[in-house]
Length: 196
Image (cartoon, rainbow, N blue to C red; front, side, top):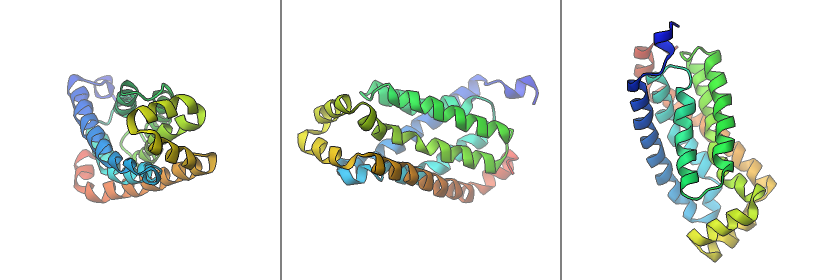
């Protein structure tokens, strides 16, 4: 790729912002299922399915280095600004760098590598629950202030290492389904963008 084709331009940044807003709104809407503590554990998996078409369309539109990292960091930064701990954007950054590396291997145009990068990205929401294990006292304090004592106690009983492992597995499965769903729904866009 020539340098002009690999550099992010203002148009690309606008696309990142627009897709970032769409992704966040959808994440927030699906996240409403977390009002029921047991469903909170399913949230990363369900959103993995919903987010697949959005992210794959984004990757078809912006096939440049670092675009996915910037896009993927919007939601974790918003989550941090709304009260989550620094663990969320920290884990997200590492996750997005891995996804970026996968995408780079496919030269940003490989559908297979873009799908795999999305599956990795789909695990970001698990960091919200990871806070409960790593920063338990702080997370419980934040959750109780927002959702009340009864909800916090119910959630605390559900969060353990085994269940968190299942949440990560669910996110990978949801991300895989979302990637295949995105591929199916957006086949025409991928052909137009030259992604094979």
